Amino acid sequence: MERVAVNPVTWSVEMGFNQGEVITGHTRTLYCSGQTAMGADGTPQHEGDMAAQVALSLDNLEAVLAAADMSLANLVRLNVYTTDVDLLFQHYGVLASRLGAAQVAPTTTMLGVTRLAIPGQMIELEGTAVA
Image (spheres, rainbow, N blue to C red):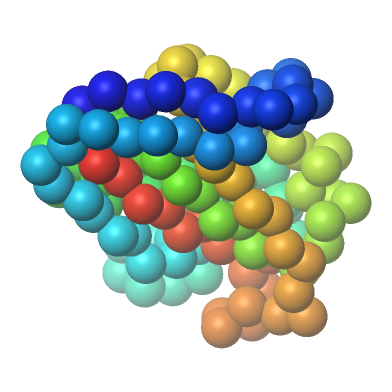
């Protein structure tokens, strides 16, 4: 797979995402359902703790990727849904550092929502990955 960043402006790169990416040579595409801070048994975790919810949501996203023999490095699209955009930005480093460590800057959209499907959840990560 080859990735070519498309950034007619560069401010987004400093925030950890590309404006667009051209992906060629891939053979598999994985569409990941939204991942939240749910334990393996399906119980919500870390109510009221945005940083911990971001970390566990990422762990859960990575588990889906790993089950498909992929990693964060394969992400080409990341949708971030949050019930509190301002609070998420205070803890955005948790997300940005994990993506940076994977040397990936997927196209990203962040949306503030009234609530997520499970009460108490503050962030949901939905990804698309290619290999």
